[in-house]
Amino acid sequence: MTEMERENGLARRPRHQMRREERSDNKMLPLRNILNLVFMLGAIAGVVTYYLGSARLGIIIVLVAMAVKMVECAIRMIVK
Image 1: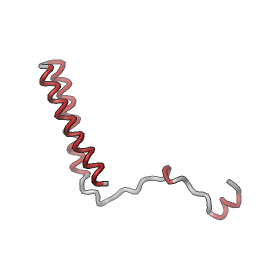
Image 2: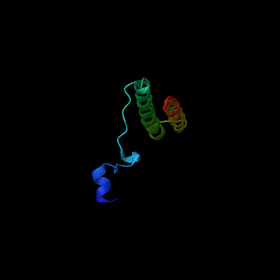
Image 3: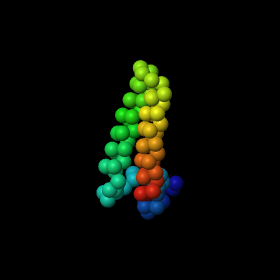
Image 4: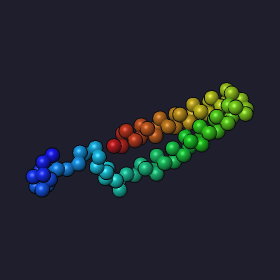
């Protein structure tokens, strides 16, 4: 980049390095946060149940938690 380009204001950061503008109208964010919390608690409960209790029940709890996470991911992709 030349000095003249810098002086004329032609130099700018690439778009991928700019901060993403936060959308204040994102109405799904609280729902997504709740779904993420349910996923994390379910995953922890499933692993604890798997090791300390029934392996079959632990697997079922983890699978349900993964289904909740898939719903959250779908909401994230659809709403964008």
